[in-house]
Image 1 (cartoon, rainbow, N blue to C red):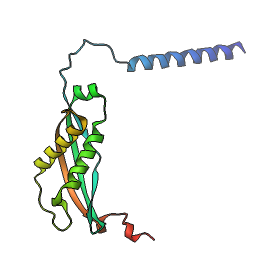
Image 2: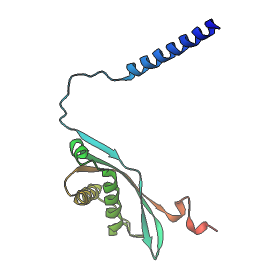
Image 3: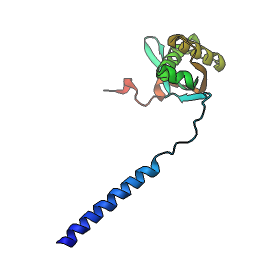
Image 4: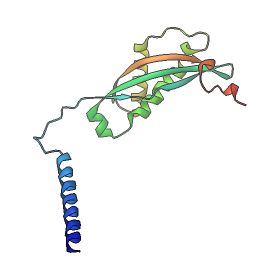
Length: 154
């Protein structure tokens, strides 16, 4: 009986010490204080699907893949989610652009689109936080290429 109690106490002690040791190993050691000069923060947005409306119906979607760059110190100071502003600005810029009208799609200057998105997002924020916008790609999918075509639903 005493051997069983002693064995239980020993197992509990070893478990507690092992847990304590594991927690202490994972804790970062304090090093010399580093002076942060601030860097550039890259935020990759989820793909943005912008509908292309034609004759009171959706003719397709422009799918845009966008990454924004912002000053890390300004982002921390403001404490806001820039992706919401950038997504809204990208959607609005693409949706309002007449060159994406159905049947008249033409080649676009992506640098100009990126500048428009940057300006629109910074206007919504109220100061220049977003440094630049990188457009990774833009694709048009017509309604027949979309997987969940609402016209095929019963």
